[in-house]
Length: 99
Length: 464
Image (cartoon, rainbow over all chains, first blue to last red; front, top):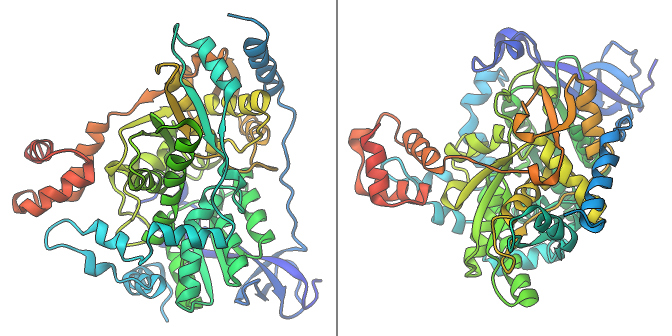
């Protein structure tokens, strides 16, 4: 249960597949156009329920609650050994005397 | 009110007019053309005034840095006596972390002046952060609309980072799945909020970039005592190149202007399944080529970004080459910057090798870097998505299949796009079915649009 005032992310279908632009590639056209917005709940709601939020700009938006206290998880990725190799190579060529 | 896709699109012109405070109709000419310079002048700001406004926002006057070690590396790869001095304009030191601050600033300032309560912008790139940043300074509300996820809900790490930055600067971020209908969402938000459309493509935005070209000329003359020989601009929607080139011209600078894009040929920009197969979300040919030959398919009736009018050459580089040069910039110059902005650097590294040692080439931007928006997470994400990453010859790179990191820096090469072919495409698009109705004024417009001459335009029209 998310409480009134909680910061949540909501989800909406903006356009179902049949209402999408005709100029789309097939792999896109079979999917709906989806939207995610964040805001403070105006009433208590369960995850999966349609609820109303007030966004940072003060807009009222309705959608299915998908996350409570959403946060960012992006990072610097896994180790990529090639990056070190590039650095070593160009230092060697520039400063190490290779012609 | 009817908010179906078709109904919103039918209200497009009225919504845009209200949301930009500019009537684009008045610049239209009887035939196929419009008065571009009159539209640019309609901002009402001179370049001096824009510089003053930007300085109020602490934007501009970014350092011009000579990349001595990278120049040395290029000279080791170049024929005897070749290898121009490479300079970079450190635009990442703008408040929002990229040159886009210049582009956002004038729009936000105009919105504030006209009494709008907020701004809306459609962008998955650095421009969102720039609008959010300037809106924060101006005390305006801000909504950024992004194309962010594929249908499985997997987001491009670079775009997610920009969402984070926009939120950090106080903006509301609306995230969408893949598709050009993002535009109708923007229109709906403009109508709902009554905010200003801080479009990337209004005259305000492009006039804001002119200061970048102007500064390059000024700084170069102060530092080196003459004009640079070549200025390279990463090209996507065309505004970066257009604004920079206009600024160079206003400063009377003689430098050639080269456009550079990452080669993403073969990937469809509106494809859900290919969305996360690309490792660059901007600065690539998927935007660069269509916006060059058809600038007027943006979110304003007439785009102020018209790069074909200003580019002397248009080259592409590979994804692997740009990642490689990004690491070079960190390892040899101590400058850790975002990869997309280094597209022009990869091109300059190659172009410098064809130029004499006493010549100078300027890369006109850097961009900020951070989680998700850095070569390591972008390569890591590509590998997770089944992209084969290995050392080899970049000419064997196939976008969406592999990323080939150059086995040696001398393998970083540019590929020239056929500019005359693009000019003929531009003419074909502009003329449409009106080949037999063209007036002398139309021909003059096409000469300006393509930066060619009357003979070229008449020949191109005759071959349609």
